[in-house]
Length: 198
Image (tube, rainbow, N blue to C red; front, side, top):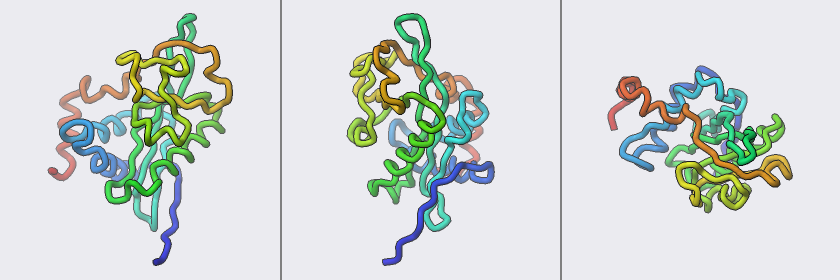
C-alpha cells in the first residue's frame, strides 16, 4: 500500500472555511448536541489572544485532515501575580482518520513550536488518557486548579519549560473567547446556517 505524505503547516485564510467544516464534523454531537467549536474558532481568529503562528493544519495527500489552534491566557496565582500560559483548542482530526496517532503528532508538533516561541506551559480540558502521553497532567497536581471544577482530572497542564510551574499555585479560568456562542447567540445561529444540515 502506498504511503501518502503528511504535512503540518500554518493555517492561511484560504483554509478557514475548510478548517471550520472539519472542526464541525469532528466535534458534532461529541460534547453536546450539534457543535459550537467551529464558531468559537471562527471568532477566536479575531481575538487579540489568538496565536496565528500556532494555528496549524495537518494535510495528507493535499487533503485537510487535522487542525490545532491556541490562545494566550493567564492563571491567577495566589500571590496576586498572573502566570501566562497557552490555552490549547480546538484541536481535532477528521473523524475517519482518528485513532491513528495523528492527533498526538499534531499536538506534539504544535507544543514544540510553542516552546520555541517561549511559552512556559500549556493548558486544556481533555481526556488524560489521550493527553497524558504528551506530558499533560491534571492541573491540580501541579498547583493550578480549574476555576469551574477545582478537583477536575480533565483540566490538564503541561510544562513546556522545565521548572516553569515550580512553586506556582493558583486558579485558571477559560478565556472569554471560548464563550462566544453564549454571548453572541444570534451570530452563532446565523453562522451555523451557512453549513450543510446534519
